[in-house]
Structures are given as C-alpha cells and as structure tokens.
Image (cartoon, rainbow, N blue to C red):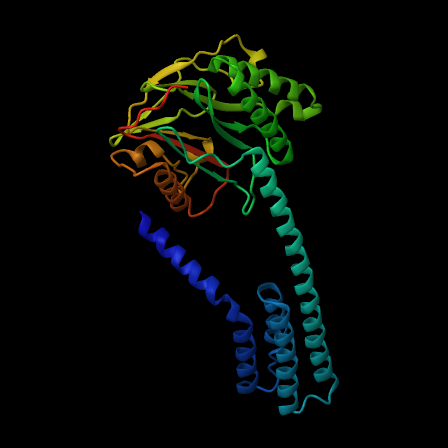
Length: 372
C-alpha cells in the first residue's frame, strides 16, 4: 500500500526541483519551433509564458533575464524572417515586451505578498507559543511528546488544543477540539487553556477541573451573538497521572478515547459513560466521572483529536491508529508520534483536511516517581 504513495512523493519532489528550469525550456523550445517551422508560425505564446513563469517561480533577477531573453528571441526571429518592419511584427514584439514588463511587476507583488505572509506566520507562531507552549520532554518517569498539524497548509494554530503540567496532584494533561474554525476557534482555545492551567494547580480532582472548564466555556459562549453561539463548545479528555502508583485517571467529554499501548498491545480507554462536550452541560444532566485505568511501566498513553481518526484516503477509508499500532513497539513517544504523522500523510496522500493534535506520554521502566 505504501509503495505507490512513496513513488508519487518522489515524482512530486523531482518535479518541484526541476520546475525552475521551465522558463528556460519555454524560451529555448519556442525559439527552436519558431526557427524550424513555417515563417507564419509564431513562438509568441512561448516568449510570453517564459517571463510569467519566472515571475511565479524565481527571483527578480531571473524574471528580468527571462523578460530580456523573451524580447531578444522574438526580435531575432522576426528579423530573421523579415517581419520586424511590418505592423504585425511590431505588434508581436510590443505584446511580448508588455507581458515581460508585467511579469516583473507580478514578481514584485508576489514578493511583497510573501513578506506579509511570513510576517503573519511569525505572529501566528508567537500566538501558538503563548497559547500552546512547548511541553517539557519529561516529568519524573514520564516522557512527553506532542505534535500539532493544522489543516491549513503553513498555519501554526487552529482549533485543537493540548496542555500538560506537573502539579501537586500529579501530571495533568488536556487534549481537546473546539467546534469552529478560524480566529473564533483560537479565542476559545485561549479560554480553555487558561482555565485548565489555573484549575490544574488548584483543583484536587479531575472532576473539579472539568467543572471549571465548563463554567469558563459557558461564559465564553454567552458573550457570543447569533449563529456563533452554536459553536465554541469543546470535546476533550482530561488525564491525571498521580505521583507514584501504576494507574491514571481520565475524564472524557465527548472526545475520541485515548489509546494505551503496552508490549505491542493497543487498548482503547473508553469512558464508562458518555458525556456532552464542555460548554453544553445545560443540555443534559450527566455528571462527570473519573475513570481509573492501569498505566504500568513501559506503557504509553496516546491522546489525539479526531483529525487523526477522520483522515481519509482516496477511497474514503478512515485511518485506524489502533490497527496500525497493534503489534509494534516504539523507543519513546517521539518515535510513536513521528510514525503516526508519516502514516497519516501516506494514507491521505498528504491531503490533511482537519487539524490534528497528538500527545503521547510514556512511563519509563525501572523508575519510580517521587511523591510530591
């Protein structure tokens, strides 16, 4: 299954590397056809395409050279066939010169647009680091890894969220997914992460943290007007790994169940009872309940958003992380997440349609965590 995808990737990379030669090919090919065909055949289309292609692919200098080359080639061939003195020849040369000049303008516009885009990316990256900061590589016997991939190419932040911090009650984590897109979703991410960071240090139980998140998101939704009030709720999973012991606790609010990996076995940590996402508690009467599951040394907990399980191939088949990970062992959480991202990309041929956040925690063997 992977060989065709790998072959397409190789071809794509080869094409991108050689695409910069396209303006030269157009100029040389146009001049060759112009010279070796009937005098009434014109290579004008090739001469105008060359500088426009250079404008989109290359630097200002290369675009100017392509523009000069197009004008010189057209002038030389028109002179060779004796058309340069006629109105048709002058009109053709004027058209090539005009398009060449326009190509230089387009190149500059694209350059300044790219500068603004790079500035926007830096701002987005600063927002991401403020809202979703880099997590520590390890806490006690736990090794932690995180990956974030936005659906919009080159974006740095979207509607998925993650967090992990060491507290007096143990290591507490949150992975969630905001209903909504764009900056409105980022605002909800900010509210949710702020509530989690504060509650994780102060609340004695996961249920208490869940209640704080609910109140914060209800307040946020109340400030919205019109159709925006139907969005802004958050599915998510809260995790608590106590200092000492070999178990962990989970509160799941309408989110895909985490996976527990141990010695090649993969098990889904499904909630004992289904509950509504945060921000929608008024629609039901369910009470939060923390589930306890074993988490022995050598085990890995994988938390993820639905961008992972809803990734489809061209046939419409969803990616199944449980099936893909069964029977396999990884040296650590980083290797696990890198493998997942590679396999999802191959499964979808690189067509990512939803944000994806992955958080993995591995309990090292032979190390006990010091009680707080």
